[in-house]
Image (cartoon, rainbow, N blue to C red; front, side, top):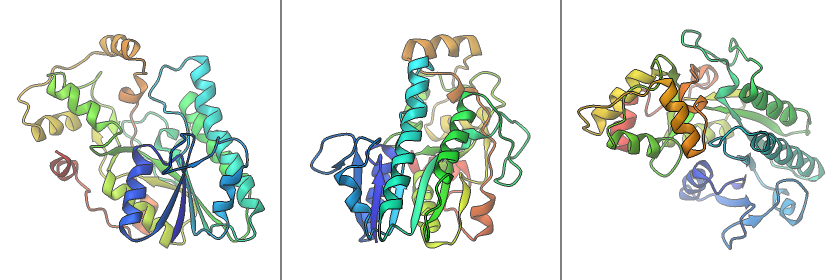
Length: 295
């Protein structure tokens, strides 16, 4: 296949690039970074980069400012605009192609669902609310599905926390655990929906080969409470103890390192109903196996 990955220089993009290149596929990365390994784009306007879409098989859009920052007005605007603008311009470029990619996968977020410690959110029954993060998810998906392109199948990827050693949340979790701070965060009852990086890549491959469209939850089928997650992480790292952090301390720490406590305290209780119903088989269904492999 010939694949285009927009915003492909981050943790997920690099992992997908390695995965598909290992299968013999051609991967072209669109990035705002000027680099001999990437094709430059600004994420807002159609340029020379759009010629790569002609005759390609798959387009994957992962572009967007990281949410690992303080939610200032300026950062909120950048988080929203980076997602909306990149999705909009890719829709426009695809619409102008004579032979557009047959599959268009666009990043979304499992954070689109409400904070829930008991409600297991599938694609069909998931409850979506109205705060900043959920609003971002809704606006992102609305922009993505606002354009219908003949013969192009669209899938929005409601992705949970992806666990891998090359980026994302796990390296930071390992660091605080090594420092003896790997106890529960807040009350510890919040659910963590997670997926191993290998299963993430395989699920994207599966979606490309399938006929699924619309929204799909990209997460392992076994969400864990924060208490259990941190306990299993300590066990995997052979750490005999972990100091817990109350909310006030997390708020102070988040302010000091320039992030938000929502990333730790929101309960993401998400289930991959459509993947499972379509026959996808997870290599890592249990967190213990996932951490054993990664650590």
